[in-house]
Length: 378
Ligand code: KG4
Ligand code: ZN
Image (cartoon, rainbow, N blue to C red; front, side, top):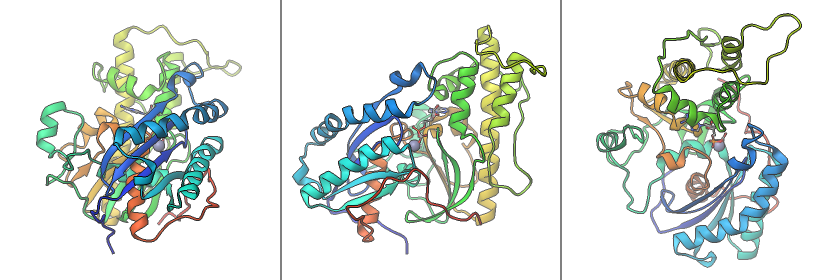
C-alpha cells in the first residue's frame, strides 16, 4: 500500500546529527517545514579538508540545545505542541549520532511522546517532498525560470513521485541507487564500492588546493570551464552493474595535475600552481565524468525496474551540472529544494510522519547505528 501523509496538523520535531551538521526542524503534516535550523561545522573541519569525528561530536554537544530552542521558536511552537520526536539514528559517525539520538530519546521520554528513528539516507530521498509554509511547491517551469537551478521537474504543482521510482542518494557519505516502491518500501539496488561522489568532489578540491567542502566550489568553477578539456575516466563497473566507483576518477585528477608518480615517489601535498582557466577546465571535465556516470546509472536502474519517476537527494543533488543533465529526461525527475539537499533535520521529521502513521515508532532503547540497513542487491 502506498503510504500517504494524513493532513491533520501534526507537528514532528526532527533532529539531525549524523555527521557534521547539527539540525533541528519542525515539520507539519510530513511536508510543510515550519522551521529548519542547521548549525554547520564547516569552519571547524575546513583546515583538515574533511570531517574530524571527535571535533564533530564535541560541536554537536555544544549546538544541540540552542538549535532545538531556535527551531521551536522559528516554528512558533513549544515542546508541548509537538506530537512526536524524530531522529536520524543511522548511518553516520557514532559519536555524532549518539548526541542526536540521546537528545531525541530524552525528549520523547520526558514528554511522553513517540520516538521515531529514521534512516538518514532514506530521509535524503524523502527531502524532495518538503515544502514551506505556503504548502505548494513551485511547478517546474516557473521555478526554472526564476533561478535556473533550484528545479523541480514535475508534471503538476505538487510533486508526487509515481512509484516505482528510482532513488539516487548522492552525498559526501553515500552514492546509492534505490528502488522505491513507496516511501516506506525502499530497496538498495546499487552502491559505491569505494568513494562517495561528494567525497570525490571534496578530495579533488583538496588536490587542486581549493577549499572545503569541494562540491559547491568545483560546481561553480565548472561553469566557466570546458568539459571536454580532459577526458577523465568513467567507471561503469561492467555493462549491467548499478554500483559506482569514484576513486579511480579522483586518482586520474591527481595524476593529471601532478603527473604519474615514479616507483619511489609519493604524491605531493602541495597544491599545483594552476591558472584559473586550467582549474576551470579540470573542474568542468571532472564534473562531466561524475554527472555522466550518475546519469547512466540512473538510466540503467530506470530500465531494470520499469520506473515511473526519479527522485534524487543528498548534497550532490544541489549540483548544477547534474540538474542540467537531467533536464528533459524521459521521466519526471525530482530534486529537493536547495535548502534540503545537504544534511538537515526536516527530511527526517517529514519521513517520520509516514512512519508514525504506519505505527513504526521506536523503543526508548533505540541505538545509534553507524551503517545503513543492509538489503541485498537485486
Ligand atoms: O548530504 P550531505 O550534506 O552529507 C552527507 O550525508 O554526506 O552532502 C555533503 C556533500 C559534500 O561532499 C559536498 O561537497 C557535496 O555534498 N556538495 C556538492 C554540492 N553541494 C554540496 N557536490 C557537488 N556539487 C554541489 N553543488
Ligand atoms: Zn546526508
